[in-house]
Length: 430
Image 1 (cartoon, rainbow, N blue to C red):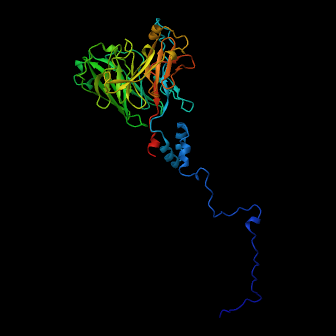
Image 2: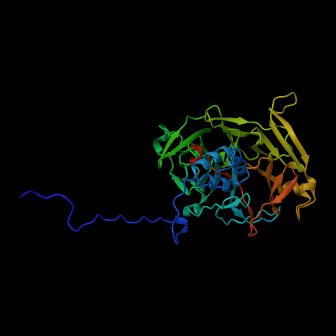
Image 3: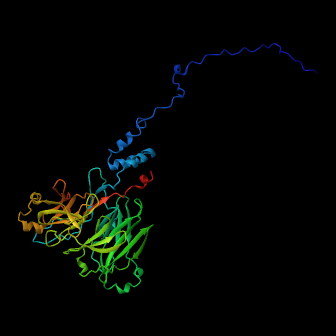
């Protein structure tokens, strides 16, 4: 049967639905506005001109600048350009000591106090050695490139190398260096009985954010100095001994060497008590030699200290006979052993401001001696007044500042200026 085509019976064409206008979204209650095609405005800090952000960063303290550098990549790059070139001084480490009685009494308190940190100012971080509990069995010996070197605070035979503790207070890392093996020197049996261990010092640091460094020790073997170098990297310590410095003769008891050396002008210097010369170690070549200070230094007990001027020159300072003298290296017609006087001032009136200090010139001479040049602020001297405290003398302002703790103790020797290892790794790569 053929299929019928056509309209259905009784059907009609459906009417189209009436179209109603949709009101604008703004007129509907509780409606969400469509996303705008206009980009959101930038924050105020992002619209600053390129040269404004560095000007802001240069006004920040060092701690705030390092915090800003961690905000984003852009700020890190800007902060890297605003950093000081020289490592920043954070403060000083020292062992507190009780003030001894004035001369002629030579009684000293033998109590040992753990090393503490005195921040430079309110913006400096508060560092401590609490992360290394065994540090209480050691005492400060050197400070260089963000590291502290400590030696045992108990007496050991001077013929033996002691253990050395190296700490990084900023990152709370530590390394304990054991004495060198006996086979470090092939013919060590020849020198072992006559060996005298003098002291140690931090030599160099390979990377500011890694515990990778070198320590130099020196001994007197058969009347001649010998350097020993410990290289520490990846938790491994390797020792090497250098040949004897046979051109340098130690013709006195090595007991008179000061155990702590002084970093100055790229070299190390060890003072010799009651001697008119110092032992010099060139850190680049590790060669020993003697250096003569000026022959015209005042006083008869050779109370002088080697140091470095703010512009990096080697210097000798003394405060004998109430006169501060600063000598620097220089060859002129009037030079004295290669030294010339650069600064000289009468500081007797400065001493008059110290409470209780005797007015008698001879008694003052017996009580006062220069301890060191402040490595962190090289225009300042640390001066010890036996029985009257430890002071910092500012050669610019000619003022004395008492160095005392809140507990009534004074700063003990040495007073180690602590610089942050520089630059931090995350800024060095920016």
